[in-house]
Length: 243
Image (cartoon, rainbow, N blue to C red; front, side, top):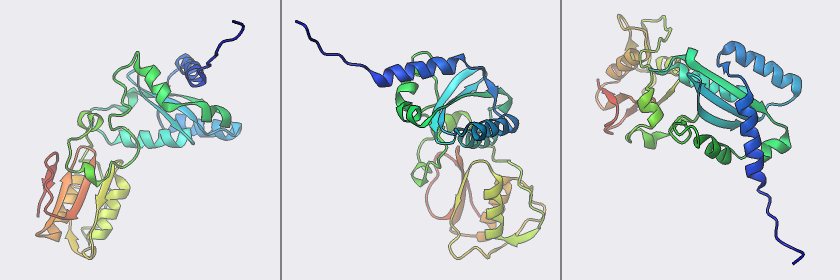
């Protein structure tokens, strides 16, 4: 017969080429200096979207795709800076900036699947993503990433006042910590909090706030962040802070 069907697997072909190009790049340290240089490069080339690969100790651990690669890497850097058992000096990255047509063709799931063939311990799908996991995760078993690299609850918080309000203090904590901190004070935001002798770190300041708010209030230090609510919820996978 002088005819046959022909199928071209476009996604697989493009993905394999991107993986090859990523693997050929050197690993750059992930820090403020390299991110500033990446921002300059993106602006000079009018290209922000692309794919990137995070390394830990020289081993690929996370592959992502973003509309602004430098911004997303900055989010990852901030998140990792507030974690125990993770030295930022060991973290590096590679990035490929793509034009609009190639960015559309780059399929993140296919790329991850290719990398997992040789790097089974990738963090993708293991809780590393940049988003707040949400309240439903407060009482469930922490993800692999959060169990392995829990938050540094002693993160320093610069706060000079010895007497303040709960709302003012919690806003300062939220701005300072590089991890999720959720709270709802309702109408109790004006409650006075005495910080005399209280260490200026996230957990100690949260505990002082809970004490000031009194009965019915509860704080919790979880693997991925901290929370404070007026609640009777039980935080089985975290450390509860009570008045």
